[in-house]
Amino acid sequence: MLLLGEVFPNFTAKTTEGEIDFFEWLGDSWGILFSHPSDFTPVCTTELAKLVQLMPEFEKRNVKVIALSCDTVASHFAWAKDVQFIAGVSLLDKFPYPIIEDKTRVIAYRLGMIDKDELDSSGIPVTARAVFIVDPKKKYRLSLMYPATTGRNFIEILRVVDSLQLSDREPVATPADWKVGDDVMVIPNLPESEEFFDHVVSMSRLPSGKRYFRRTRV
Ligand code: BEZ
Image 1 (cartoon, rainbow, N blue to C red):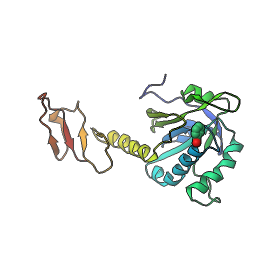
Image 2 (tube, helix red, strand yellow):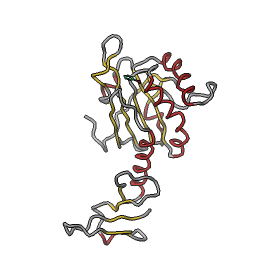
Image 3 (cartoon, protein in one colour):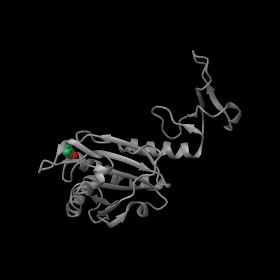
Image 4 (cartoon, rainbow, N blue to C red):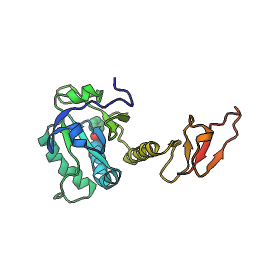
């Protein structure tokens, strides 16, 4: 089982942009590897189309995106036009991110991306809606796992990238429902003597009497 903070397992794969070595392809970028159950299915089409629309936002954050399913590269190429159509972009545009062919499911099983409830036409389980975020040091930083029947919220995925990148820069953590511009929390193990923020906006007086609830602004 892969644990947060460990180095992500590298792999090679056949993709719509040729054979890739995952780490080489990432270079110095953050990376998001996400899987979908199958090409030519409606929810998957909405998800990949949303990513097409949001690619400029991921690029702004130095994040590369790569998709994966058990379908072939030929299937991905044919389906990509439907995805672009639903995204409302020109079918002549280059598809903005690669899609991995994992017919043997070797990557999917290694990373636990399989949904046992979702079978292909031969009765073999297909990939779940998984998301893995890897940082520029190739560390595994976050994952999400959704079943086939629930499409993901890609604005939430941008939000978690913002949170990860901010907490790498500053000794802060982002509270429930945080979004860029909101106050953040000083990490609990930062001693008060080491606070370097211009101002701790508020230190809540808690029933426990403990002094950990410190909001600040970055
Ligand atoms: C879909 O993408 O629409 C889908 C795929 C597999 C199972 C259910 C829905």
